[in-house]
Image (cartoon, rainbow, N blue to C red; front, top):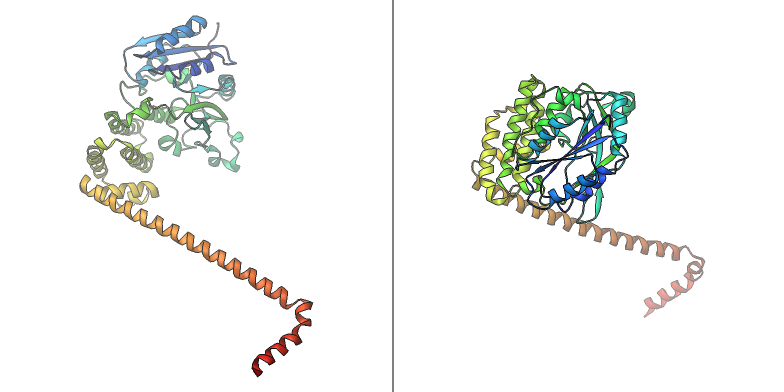
Length: 396
């Protein structure tokens, strides 16, 4: 192969149930000028055997074996040995549309892009259901809602995406020359949520970003053993504090903190509260104490608080109302009781309104019948008889 157009980097860790589907989607791409770099991150199942089986059939597959270091370190190793003009990251339990890289490569070359965003869909195997959410919704940021008139843009055009949207590394195609022109991208060992600081770094540095609207990647929601899903149950969930601090460092090092102070406050509160809600009960008290201290250290005044979104403002105030986790638990119980009460009241009102509507319909129907009878010819003709009957009743 004279020229490698795209290097596909796949960190692999204990995904024997899903790896074949992922590799099939890569090896059967319509774009043939690709290399497939599989970094086996210390798998203990049959993932390595599956990789070797595929590598024996397809010479474009390169296997690198490392001790378990986490997805960030695996991506960095793959990037260091890559030779393609562009870089694509794929999680090993996901898969890619068969013409994805042909379309993305053409799009990137046409637009001279440092990064190409593209749409994705999610798959829930428990329900056998595909879900598409327009997580980008980029069009609204451009004049006349026509992104075609501005094929390239940078972070200033889509500022909300820097700290609050689509942190994943796998929903973008990167120009290799762009990534390798820096040596400080965040690829840590043994850190969950590692793609968040990396996303912020590339967004701030890219001079030319473009957007491919097609859904080209399928993200598997239901792998309970994935790093993100398993982190809820372990101390890895505390990595979010490290990640938030790293994002702050990125903004400071880039001289962008003043520009992004309000967005960073929203980001920090949103991320910490989100993972606090998801963490296992065994870690709740410790997480609460840390998150409350972090919120207190933000030293936000009324002006800062008023710049928060409604949701993050509620989350912030909800934490700050409680001086201890026990107090928070009691307030949570009260809020749950209030929520239950208002839900029951709402349902009761709906039932009463439904009954009222049924009664009004019945009444309206009876009135229509009475009107029809009273206006009919037979009713008019029998009026003398009815009058005679009433007179006879009076005589009795």
